[in-house]
Image 1 (cartoon, rainbow, N blue to C red):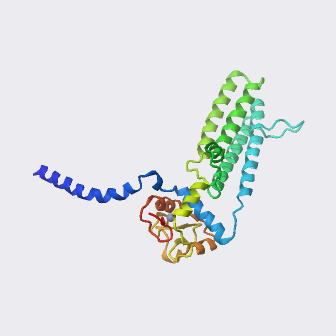
Image 2: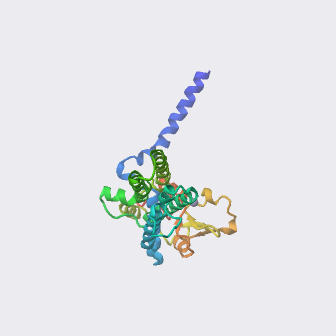
Image 3: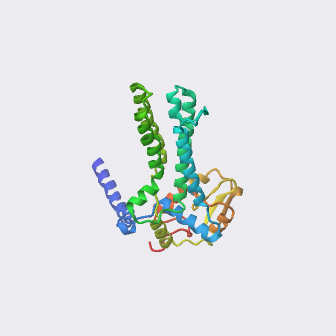
Length: 283
Ligand SMILES: [Zn+2]
C-alpha cells in the first residue's frame, strides 16, 4: 500500500514538475540573465532625474566622501603641529600612551571611513561607472574597501614599523589591532552588488517602464521609498489611508525617489512582475 502511495505522489510530482521548471529554464541562457536589483534601482533613479529634471548632486557626494577619507587620515595619523598639543592622531596618542584620546580618534576615523564608503556606494548606485575596463570598474566600485585597506593597514603598518619609540610588543599589538579594524571597515565598505552603466542601460532598454502608468507604484505617507508591489513586506503595517497608489512620475514628484530593495529584488527575480509598469519588454 505504502509503495503504491509513493508511486502516486511521485507521479503527481512528475506531472507538476514540467510546469514548475519551464519558467526557470527560460532564464538560464546567459543573454536572458536577469538584471541585478541594484541595476534596476539605478535605472529608475536615472529615469527619475530625466523626468523630473532634478539631477542628484552626486559629484558633491563624491567630493564629500574624499573629504571624509582625508579627515580619517588626520584622525589616525595627524603629526604634532609645532607646540600645539592637539588630542588628534591615534598613532601619536599611542606613542604618548594616551589611550583614551587614541580610542576616540580611532572610532572617529572608523566612522568617517564607513560614512565615506556608504556615500560612495550610494553614488555609484545612481550614477555607475561608465568604463568597460574591468580593472577600472573594480577600483571605482570597491574604492571604499581599498581606502579602508590603505588608511588603516598600509599607512599604519609603515608608520608603526618606522617608529623607534614603540617597543616590539606594542608594535605587534598595534598591527593586530589595525588588521582587525581593516577587516571591520573593509567588510562594511565593500560593494557586494556593484553596478555598471552598461547594466543600467540594458535594464532601461529591456524593461518597458511606463512612468505615467497610474498603477505604477505604491508609497506611504511616512515612508521615503516607493514600491512596485502592493503586497510588499515593507507595506504590511501600512493602513489604507496612508498607502498611495500612483504613477512613478507622481511618486518622484512627491520626493519618493528610491525604490524599495525588497521590490527591486522581486522585480528582477520574478518572471511575472506584479505591475505593468516594470516588466521586461521582450520576455
Ligand atoms: Zn517594497
